[in-house]
Length: 144
Image (cartoon, rainbow, N blue to C red):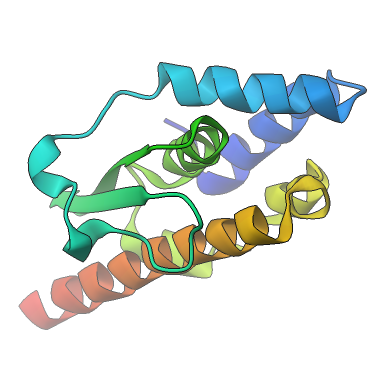
């Protein structure tokens, strides 16, 4: 597994192959279709991302000092966006997640080509991931 910056670069390179945004949407749908579903026990209000038009759930779990995420959504493009975020953040150190600048989101044109509601949902997902990381990082520091 690479660093967040390395994974972001891979994603930018993958999206650069597509000239047209319809192809990029198709790729997001493909990513969403390939995302493993999450355990039904985590599809609760507590794990629901606020600010998304569609229903999207995120769950975080610490293992050996790394934060791992699972996610699911009832909308396939949103599920694809969640899949991109999982790829970037899952298996990373909480402190690295908090510090990540996420240039890839703008570099692939995601913010410019999403509807305002999907764009808000993306920002809400990123915010929730960072909140999980901040909480996990604080827990690691207080355990020392």
